[in-house]
Length: 373
Image 1 (tube, one colour):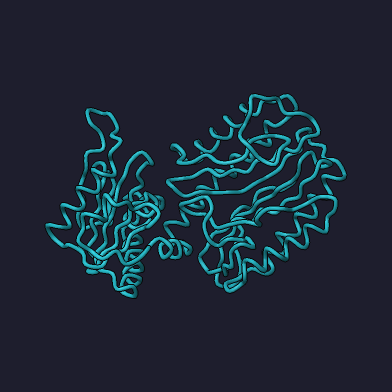
Image 2 (cartoon, rainbow, N blue to C red):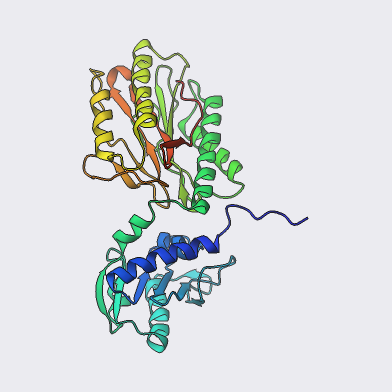
């Protein structure tokens, strides 16, 4: 009996569907070619994930044909009609001029086969070494459109996000087993990395975020944690390029004070607000304000950061639960909500974070593991 395919492998049909959505944008903008050079966008549209040390590119023509320029022949199938390779290494040494090499390969192909007239690129990352040699009108920045397309996650993306989140479940469970006064923060960090790797069965593609005890956040230190501290573990490991992001807090001596418990109870009400009110069309700015008003009733403590953000191929994506953006929730988005309260009486503070999927009628909680201090 044939073994069922892994839900985490490259889904060519899903990549081609994403390409079709981009083609609709290209038609609206009157573009006959789009070139993407950011590794996340190459992965999103074509499939393979290339490490940050490489400089791939992908070109998508208005006729739907896709050219991938890669540092080596991909081992997995790719959603491209042709794959060109450039010299990423010389005698095993990584080259520092990879973007130039990658661009030269793509330019040679385009000029010999389908020179573009109206071109779209990512303005923040596509340099003149790629655009100048092409006799084309540089029409616009495709990056905002790609970010908008990335908001709604396809089933293959959701599978990887759920796996990334499963890694945090293993990490938080291990944290509750080992946290006690006198344990070194670096030991906690190492044990949590091992827990995620054990869950994934392979290397992580990102570690993130906060591993410092008695602080709002920060990297792990060569320091023993102390009784009375609250240990905020804001964890953001990535599985095959997709980032989880959720937070739990543990009282180091397992004896939270009355003050700490009161703040914790106040924070929990925000999740009830989210689960009751979020659905497609809800204003993210309005949700932020509702949570902000509630949390800041809990004087003398303060809540003074964003309420959350989308997650995916980058740790912070849309939707932005932040007063500096005016996003609206859409079905298919995955987002993190991280209310907190801070003050010296709390031994710095408490922050809790859940991940949610926006459905057609509300939200699905993706992080149903313990919240207790």
